[in-house]
Image 1 (cartoon, helix red, strand yellow):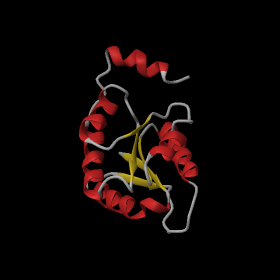
Image 2: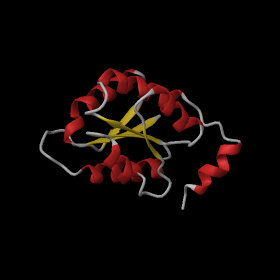
Image 3: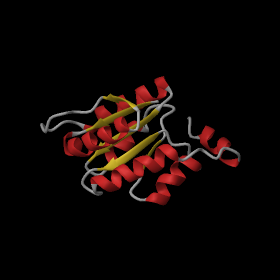
Image 4: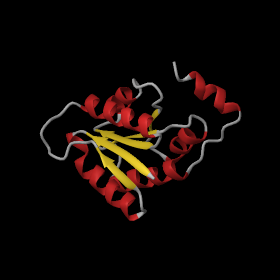
Length: 141
């Protein structure tokens, strides 16, 4: 399974650790994020991840300092459902109820170990469908 990951300059270390973790689990990683510490614009990376996720029908991960801006940028792409998550329950509900296809994380907000834990929850949780399906369809406006 492919995972698209993108980040700004604040999230290089977190991205690298997540990529390492996912590769060990057998995922193919498409890295569209920056790999150096020069200041960059997070919207460019959020948009690029979202475009690839919707085209390839796979999951994505976006990371900036807070996770807020990059998730807003990702959600501008039709079919992208980026969820900013900081703890277990919202990560699980983002998948179960919203069929989120992009996990947004804040590199300045949570520890790398917590981020990896949330990535695992996100990827292991299934969309419940049912009553949530119609609601998710309404997000595609």
